[in-house]
Image 1 (tube, helix red, strand yellow):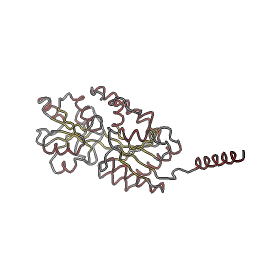
Image 2: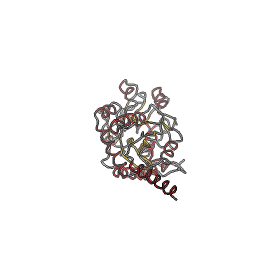
Image 3: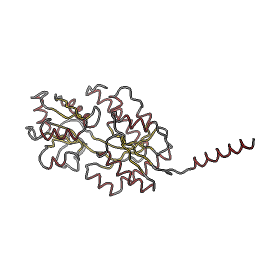
Image 4: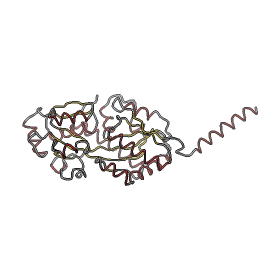
Length: 320
């Protein structure tokens, strides 16, 4: 009887100690569903390094690419909701995936806890300079006069690059040839060589080629002009009712402790206010974009899922 009592007391004591263990007390992992070396990797490592300083805790970035983000996402969804495993989430990629992928093993709204957004970046619509157009309206006129003769890069089925082109086609009525690529780097090579004629991409990627004259930017996709391309008008300025961009934020598994979520939200806002961090992202055409509360970020994400659903239906994009 005494032995059982001692065991029970020991278990209770360890449970209390565990419950009282302050967060964070061990390394935090940021899982990215993309390959190392891209913009997402830069965001995760830059934010992770600063967050590590603020929390006095190691922050490790791990890449788990594959299966259209499903491998990394499913891993985080099934992780303990203790604040030590986080996922870098891109919108509208994740918002659209709900509507474009059959039989997902998770529900992004139900099974993830939004914590805070980090950065936003508009896209730039670039063409090979051999194309005889100087603005979007000239492009639309030329494309309609030459249906299915202009090829564009399609990178994946529901990321920002492919979705933006699909929505542009739906909004303007142009008929283009879809050339699929596994990544934007090969697509960019083909755009430069003239194998394809147009491409939407994040602003930072084609900047050197735009500056050298090897590519011609026709428009950016934000609600205002991009800081890196102040002389390039937006699509909306040129009569196309479309604004579109890419955002990256952090989420965790469902049912995370509210105090941990709120602490992370505040710490991430602080990270993005750091001048060193802002300077790094500015060079890559990314703008800090955080939410004051995790609830506000969650509401934005829910609305984006609904918005992407409508855009996908209007563009007649079929789930795979």
